[in-house]
Image 1: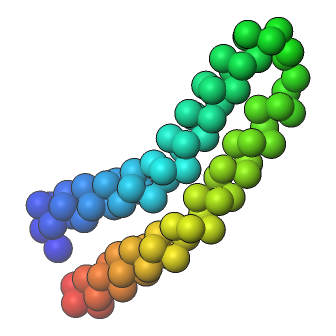
Image 2: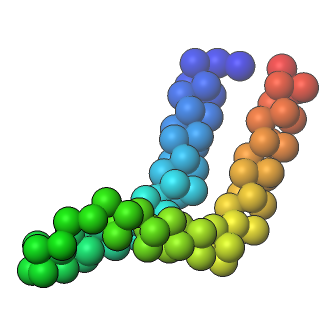
Length: 87
């Protein structure tokens, strides 16, 4: 495999990593900011108040998009193994 092929593969890997990790991380960040605003307005500073909603949102995102994430990761793995076998 040439250097450009490896570079293309690494680029594809990093874009896939961003696509897979992006939705749960972004939603968790938005929930955290929303709860921080509520905590600042009410002056309630409880650690578990931010943890539980983030955990629930991440769980829901993974329930609804987990199968699509898994199939994308499986397709990439099959392509990677085909490249290894061909090389």
